Length: 321
Image 1 (cartoon, rainbow, N blue to C red):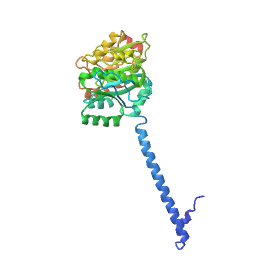
Image 2 (cartoon, helix red, strand yellow):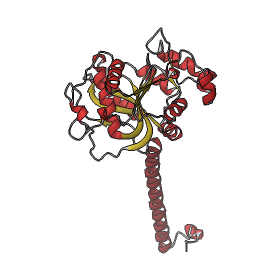
Image 3 (tube, rainbow, N blue to C red):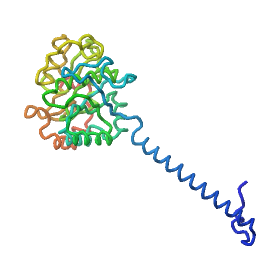
Image 4 (spheres, helix red, strand yellow):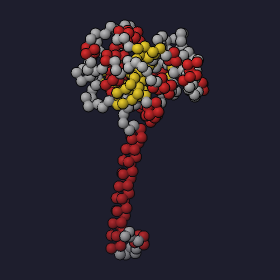
């Protein structure tokens, strides 16, 4: 039973009373310190937990040869990595000069926080990550590490980030995505388009008669590949063969798909010049290869209800359009 508060006001002439008071004060001080320490540790742990539960960014190490071939374990640095099951993995191809683009994307359709990305994954069945390689520029790498720490939304490839090597980066991306995710579709998109993830999810969820399908706007737009294609499977014999690399990564992938005789599905909703109720990807065709001045245009498009808030047309209405 706790001591009576009257003990704090006992007569000072008593030595025992002094000792009791001192002991109680010591106990109170010790208990207060314990509570303070417990709360401080709890808040720090809670703060870290609230910021990031499980890190979303992943760094994948591949064979550093110029051909972009994988190592024996498939190229992933963590051999025990468990593949996550999703409907689609969407890799937003970006570079070291695209910090402003990523900022605009995070202010529009790409969630800027850990919880937002997880909610988007749960609602659409799609995982979104920025995909970037490495550079020998220490200041750029330092800035990238800070961005990864702040936003936690990257897939980092151990391949040199150069425009002339985009086909190799693209191949490395598909290999890494396959190694990390058991996905129905692997999606390559650029960081200069306005995207509607909800409509992309509906497109990928459609029933298709062909098991091997390559989707995209055949002029420009995101590139989709079905996982049953053996060419990027980490342990497939096809990966040991030499692929012809063109200067343009989309042309390169298209040539591979043609060579493997897969079904091509041309989706014009992936290359609309203006926002419409059926638009999945919007870019300034034919003036630019993406959005002209994407940092500004992304924000302008997102401020329009027809772009960011319009409902999706039913399938029958889309066919009539």
